[in-house]
Length: 113
Ligand code: AMP
Ligand code: ZN
Image 1: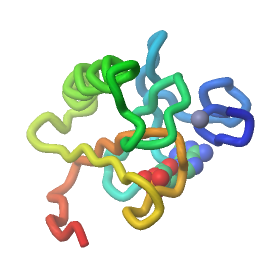
Image 2: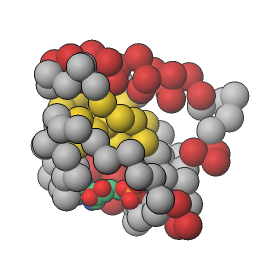
Image 3: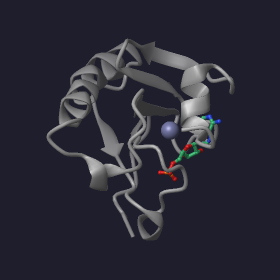
């Protein structure tokens, strides 16, 4: 999608610090980290948000969740981490390309308000 910043990152039009990439997904460091480790996982296919996960694309989401433990181990946070997705504006979504935040490297606040 032409005006989507995460599609532009996939296309190499916006730089990112890549952490993991394969034919289906990309993971890169968040530009505004909320924890010592803050990695964004995205499908290469543009999906706006978690609300649009369905039987045609859920295999990509499953793949992301297979890769997350490997990346967490590589980054040394497999003792404990959080995976979050914000779906639509009231939940805090600011980039409308489905993504999962991987957060770790410190004791995380459990206040999710
Ligand atoms: P959300 O608020 O859940 O939509 O998360 C969007 C995330 O994308 C935020 O944590 C931003 O800091 C991050 N972000 C936005 N632009 C970039 C970028 N160019 N490179 C890396 N992370 C970004
Ligand atoms: Zn996109």
